[in-house]
Length: 428
Image (tube, one colour):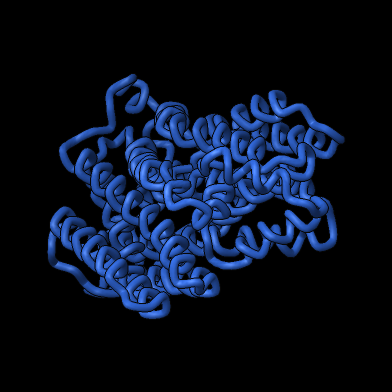
């Protein structure tokens, strides 16, 4: 069921987005559940490190979690298109919450077995409900004004970006007063509460997001939610993800090479701030350029500016280039989601959005897969993103004297800035 937007002006405002039927509750519930994507990865790393005493094991467990989360995202979204949010979101959300609690209990035990933690993490990563794609599909179903929808997608992209800043900060605050597994329990509560709130939304009760669950979605069966526009959106999202992963590595290595580690949090903060500003401006401009063309131009500008950052004479000059590049980040991601939505069939919007997120996450993973190459410069970043640094880097950490609390403080010191922690950033 589509509800006509109350705003039909050439340039509807963000306030008009939030005044649209069911929009505020849809945004709030979806973002609450997606906050677990910002808290779970760091909580998992800290919990496993405390339980096993090894960053190498923590990295392997995190890699298992992230791999299943990214690879199975389109399949989880396809279930929503086929059966609807109410039937396809609650069971995996409940199962993931239980597995996160089980991980918390297992990691809290002394000398927790690495194999068991890896299996539990892989199972938990396979089950996150695709709240991001579902939220956007619901917005697409309720907002018929494309300018208003573009604003809604821009607002959602910026808010989702901020979740990956606030999530680690929230975990850092929590572990000052409790053990690291409490962060996993918090993540379980967030994903389950957010999912239940979303499916209880009047938008779902009135049919938004259910279009693929009725006869239409079943008739589509296994048909792909495809079109040339979707393939282009996924490919560009993967390129944007590779660009972002590469610049994060560049920032760490560049700052280390200039003996300015303090530039890393500033560069990451500049990237996030630039992305937020760019995303809001992108949504505010009444574009008349086709979405596909806009996506190509934005991604080209992003790559050009961030590539120029590598030519900076000083780390703090690089911060300025990264901030400038951030202006194109959220707009490019938003445009990819919009192009996927325009290209998807009526019974495949959720899956189309999930494919964009999968492309982005895959690109980021490819770009950061060789993070250990610069030597020690990227070892901390590699641990935080899933432990892809060479074994030597991990060996030095595991052999270093000091308590688990000291190691936790080192990780939190890195994550108390807008640096990203490994795990699926988008798509579910």
